[in-house]
Amino acid sequence: MQHKCKVTVIDKKLFPELQVKYLADPASGVCPFYEVGQEFVFERYGGKDDFWREGNGTQCAEAWDCISRYIYTALQGGAVMRGWTNDERLMIACCNDGTRPVVFRIERIDYKAVYCSAVGNESAEKNFASALSEYNAVRKTAFDRDRGFAEIILDKALSDADILAAAKRCGIAVTKID
Image 1 (spheres, rainbow, N blue to C red):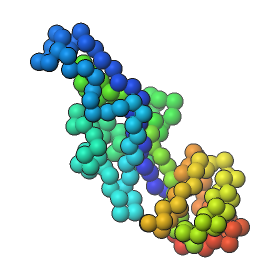
Image 2 (image 1 turned 30 degrees about the vertical axis):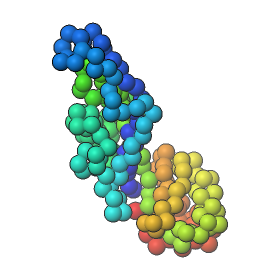
Image 3 (image 1 turned 30 degrees about the horizontal axis):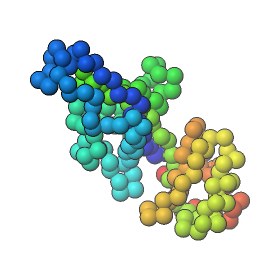
């Protein structure tokens, strides 16, 4: 099984009374770096490694300092916050700017990379995705044609045997499952 981490900006706060009292520019306002609704997906598989160098420049250094440990944990398949949130794949965190914090939703996305003959054949991709959707464990199937595999994004565990059975029903050859 492989893992990605999706980070979503869910809120931006402002404490103007603290900015007036403590900042050199008392009218700094809300964080200019992020916008509510922005999403960032981090991955470390198939030749990609989006984690290093503060998300390749997509993150503010102060925010990165606060959220990178959760991203790293998710990318390794660990519990992002066991016992704290109602789903161990999820964490709500914020940056450490006390006058204008940004609130993030950090989610581990579990998936299997399936190297198969369906990749690049639109009809076969559609049939394979349909066969996999019959399993209640599959959230989505996406095909990465550039890297040559199907991503089966999971809500819960799905065995390799089930994936192979779905592929066989569609006449698809599977060479590797990661």
